[in-house]
Figure 1 (cartoon, rainbow, N blue to C red):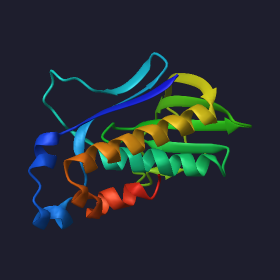
Figure 2 (figure 1 turned 180 degrees about the horizontal axis):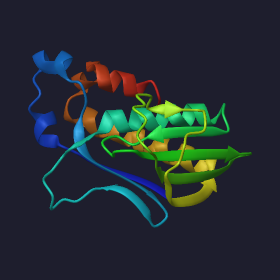
Figure 3 (figure 1 turned 60 degrees about the vertical axis):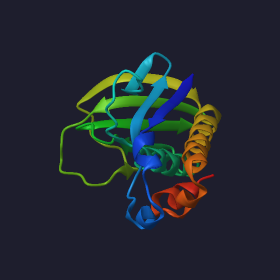
Figure 4 (figure 1 turned 90 degrees about the vertical axis):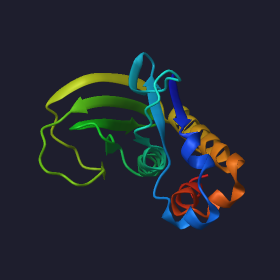
Length: 167
């Protein structure tokens, strides 16, 4: 089972003025994605650290999902996790998700459709593509809805409007 959790730093969102809308580059928060018992990131009310860029995470996941519908292999670098990647191998809607460490090659691409060199496989998880599609769509919509409940004017912020194209 895949599960995406997040927590928005509402202190920042609540204090954005209408004149600051164009200055928003992302929304900070906590982010966790779980593939069965395999967890990347965290969401914890006791930890007041909001160091994940939520729009960046959701944009990467949605873009990777778009590519998975066209390609049999997609590699996604994980934000702020040195040399850690998620690989998605799609074979007739049977999806193998592999969490790897790779050697740094100075690569600046965030998503690839070509095989990449693997230093170490950390874990893998098998599921179907529909599960992943549903969960990414659910979490993306929920995140946008949570942001817009603060003030609907936030839909004009560039990162939010970019993320809305996926729903």
